[in-house]
Length: 260
Image (tube, rainbow, N blue to C red; front, side, top):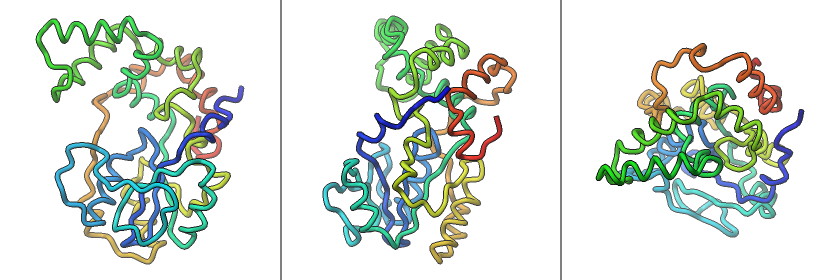
């Protein structure tokens, strides 16, 4: 069965991060080490300010092109993508991809609130209400993990996976096919790095760009990691769950070269 035709994705704006110092342009994909890579490129561009939020980079839009700063974010309307590619034609284009089973697991442990808000609102609102009645500020650090843990007591992993099958995966970039988000039909990627080998993949990107960045890469930090902890595959992945995800993400498995 085919899932995620890309029609919805083709109408959305596309985010890129440009590091002019090293002539790199990066396409972030949700749940694929994007926070880590954006932070790393920000450091390379001299953005040393405190990172109290993910979107700390300057944002450019419209007819942006080289010369707009050190490291910055571009939000490009889909119809303008071809023109953007032409303006940055001599940059090294790359992205980071992830094994689909691991991405689904990470979404369950870190982004279940998005699923619950859309498809199981009774669980979503009951969880927030319980925190409020207990006098716990919903925005305080640490309370997000508490909410996620409570939601998981109501929404099991098989229930979440079955919900993805029943509701589809085009409703949020965190669960959408990576191959749709990449827009590989237009974007001329020089490298697609596997998240499982992130440091080595980034070293390869820099080598392609003619840059030595060994020291910087040694200090690469893993940010926004999954709160799953040491989960054993067998604890979650029943044969039925694996079959559902293999079907939903068949194009990602095939095009990105991951084993089913």
